[in-house]
Image (cartoon, rainbow, N blue to C red; front, side, top):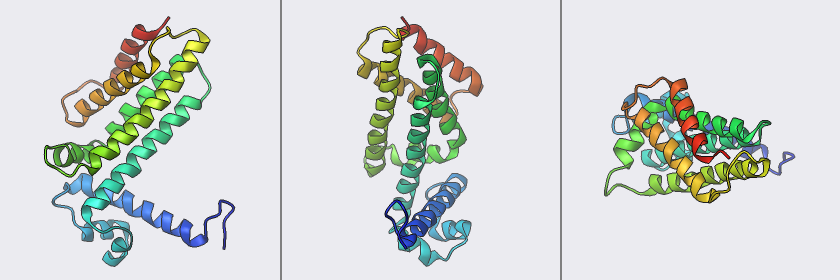
Length: 204
């Protein structure tokens, strides 16, 4: 059976099963850490046989990196939604800041693993490469919102690409501080501070 999107029913079921495994893996890694987590744990969490996991993934590291991709792509999708929602440039920019900080806060334990296991010198760079690609996607989303701001007259004429990367860097830095437990600021106050600082710098 072919769906309206051109995919077979088997494709849809396979995609659904894979997303279930990735959600289960994210929960297991967050609870147990990368080294302590096992394929058996992930299979048990997902309610499937161990062999089923190996139908989709070759190793524990591949599962982790795919779970990382699955998570950050969800963030990028959320940011795109915020960028296309109704409202002013200021409304959208605040929404983008909130989406990113809230996302990392909601998955803090999971991203602690990335910082400790995959962010060290000499480690496999696959995760870093993935984060770089999605970082550029986030900057593109931010840049489009800034372009709208220039058109509506609320944002000064700046180098919008560099400004977008600066915003992506600032929000990423604050998110990592929170992941590592270095910031104890309330989430709402953190978002207000970041947005206020950004807006004062770019508003016309």
